[in-house]
Length: 215
Ligand code: AP5
Ligand code: MG
Ligand code: ZN
Image 1 (cartoon, rainbow, N blue to C red):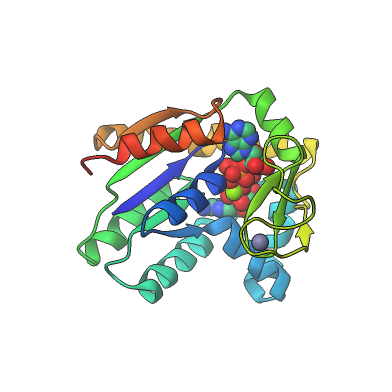
Image 2: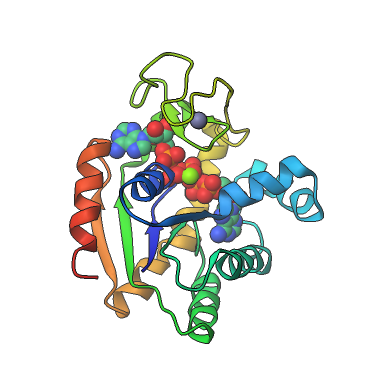
């Protein structure tokens, strides 16, 4: 299965992708995580992408399409993928359709996670992430033992440089201008299911599992 998670910054794409990995045999592919890894490693791609990400704008299509193509081929042709944060433009969606067609695969389901703008800002300002990739929140998702990751037992957490209120507003603007048109693109293909992302994390998980039945 290939599942696309669509939603504004802070909607819970990463949180839900990690949950899906734990509950089902699925692999998360997050272009945001891949780009942050490139920035940390100081690669050419990282140098190009870092400044753009800090402004809250989208990185050029060809850079992220290349990343996804590489990972789909590396992780195995039959793997069940959760695409988190990709595609984000019509150009990326079209490139993905072509890429999958060449590999005799297709996007099976697109889950749109809907959340109010005001809630998004609160979620992003309170977010922190473990080295292992597990995401937390100061209020909504604290580790069971303070300062220790539930998933890996690690104690090193970071906050993202683009998680300031000002940059979140720019990310939201990019979402409405460039990513929202994808909902219509996938509706035409009959693939969209919407979930209420304002609900608690576990309720959203149940709604997503329900939307995946029969796929
Ligand atoms: P990316 O890393 O994809 O960021 P984003 O889309 O802005 O989304 P976030 O990761 O901020 O939010 P999320 O939906 O994953 O929410 P989370 O689960 O963490 O992209 C970053 C940048 O990289 C972009 O701005 C762009 O520059 C570049 N980029 C990436 N992909 C690209 C592409 N394809 N093309 C071009 N450029 C690209 O949840 C947020 C917080 O809320 C957490 O603390 C969590 O614990 C909490 N939370 C989650 N669910 C709930 C809930 N139901 N109730 C309460 N709290 C919740
Ligand atoms: Mg994320
Ligand atoms: Zn961890």
